[in-house]
Length: 231
Image (cartoon, rainbow, N blue to C red):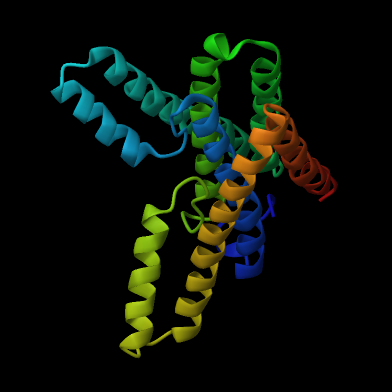
């Protein structure tokens, strides 16, 4: 899932990767909201909130939403630099390493959430999650040539609408359209299910959810890294 890229990937590989990582992203986004009252992956909403608070001269809140957007961009930037460095050196496991970095950061954030009072950990937690979401979204975007977006659903919902319109109008390449619809529907459903599970689990065990998500990402990424090195 994390070795082949671009046109080398099949729709089944894309669906498996999108479903797994979108479920993780949905759980983290929901857990972050439960912990802090802010969404770590919703950049559309965060930019809208930023403009709203600026218009109301609420500069403190505006600064927080701006920080969330910057953290997301920074995560994508770091992921992009890591991937470009790996590609230039012929490192086939570079995408697996990017997800491993995400897992390591989640591990640290889980420790922060578990052992620091919420008043001290809240800002660090949501900013860290925004960084992680940017990192994950950049990695999945690059490996799939922008077919997979795991941390937000606006673009995929648009693509679903367009795909349904193409099917209704009997456009050519219906098999390809159906495959894309399967990918986008799987991603949105996984994000939704992950969000529901994330709320329930976070309310039950708190920051241990982040450690569980980190463990799942390690389980996904480390075997892929070993497979790439053997290849």
